[in-house]
Length: 85
Image (cartoon, rainbow, N blue to C red; front, top):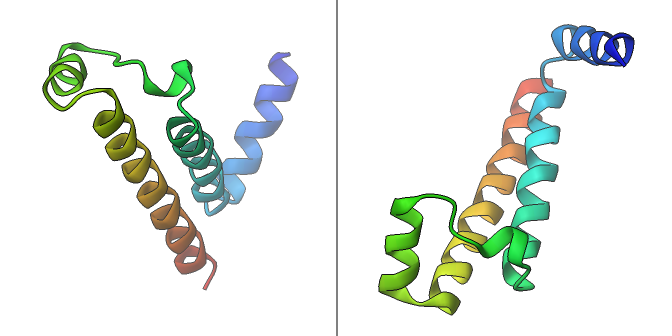
């Protein structure tokens, strides 16, 4: 297992632009999970998120969070395209 992580680390050290694609995939998964109302994507993680959840309600919280994740994915795509030039 350490050998696999070592190879992954070497790959990302040699090709740092692909880290933008990794972040893009993670943000897309969480964004889609928020829009599809999955518990693992919409449950508030800390006290600030719980305050926002209680203030705005479930639907507004998950929509806003999903929108932020999708915007993060778009930024990751632009970051990747900028890095490969």
